[in-house]
Image (tube, rainbow, N blue to C red; front, side):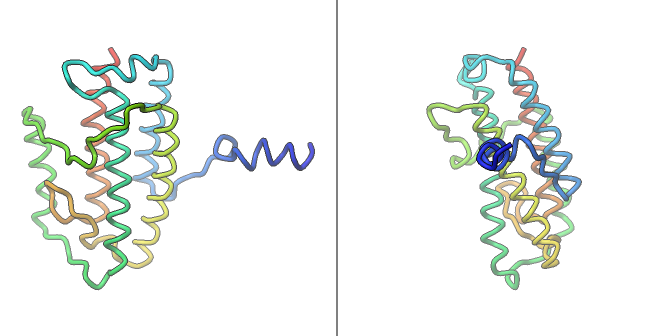
Length: 191
């Protein structure tokens, strides 16, 4: 194989040929669930992926929302942690808040998403979301390593609209809960 062929086949398109593993087990688990969902959705038509029923979000809009929520959370955390001396500790009561939110959502109480993560482009492509989200997860994996090296992963690195100031563990808990919450809606739309 010539160097040009190798470059075109492997270097320019390396994500398809070389799997980059995540170092954080929790994030790796979340990534495995995400990949499995995208594999299941590959068989759906573009019409099915983009159809809104009763004014609710389409499958692609839900996926875009989930990706954007995680990506914007990472941006916030990266900005916030530039100044580690100003980070505060997480209150013990903060660990109770996610359980309360889960309980309320389980009762059917709706929470409106912030505007920044609920505005969608006119056209959403499943493959593009998949690629963007995969890159975001790898970037977040790097961020986790940085936070742990700086020993600030237990500090309040993120300010969530409902949960308040949360640390890395609670941020990953939120990503997990948020994904599973919206996965239910995706499963209903996929029927």
